Image (cartoon, rainbow, N blue to C red; front, side):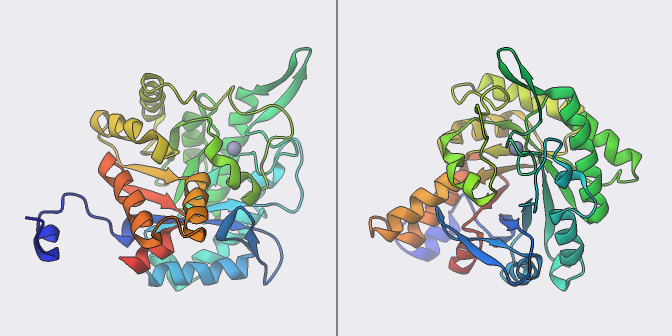
Length: 318
Ligand SMILES: [Zn+2]
């Protein structure tokens, strides 16, 4: 049954379609800005006008949606750029929603504080004798405000990526209170502390200035704990879940797929993208085949949709 492409196509178990791919965008202040990220060839920081062009291209390629991150002009300890109605992602959302492309794309807004805090952590930080502590409960209050502000600006889905305890319930409460009962929550329920996020921190300018994120992101060795985190987030009202990273955690994606009957995405993170791009540049891997194989693997593991920097290239190849 493998003799011809027609036969192989007939018995293919896993399909990959452009509509299953979500393209991340990094919005920055200014006009006409299109700044390539050194460690992520082909990925750019974009001013809002340039992001609108990307959205039109993404819609033309039939992609499922966009995932929006922001690089604010200034940062502070309270991450005020995250929950400001005039913030960079809120401004971008209003412009994007005014385009024809918006009708074809799902606009997903990342909800976190690390791009907006001057210290680069995902929550409010207090100094203690032992060093520093991320204040869980003060942080989720700001995450709720951020989510409501993004929904007001036009986000179709809000996606909390911070890994604070109880934030899904707080975001649900904040959304409902502001009249956004219909806005779904896509929770990064089991986000692992990973070396594969390295290039993203350059892209989003969000590297922690001290310490690391291992006190709130998950230990990469734990699959049972990941299931527990997902269960808790679904209990708090998450509508769908996003697994991150993808390739080094395909077994975790499979375990979640077998256990939870909710829509599930996976994020092929910056390091997964960059290492493939580096190998392509060296001529060590065949770009199109390796790219599609990496994406089919994530789908086969059980992800319904994939957030990937390859989204546009993959859609063209498909
Ligand atoms: Zn964060």
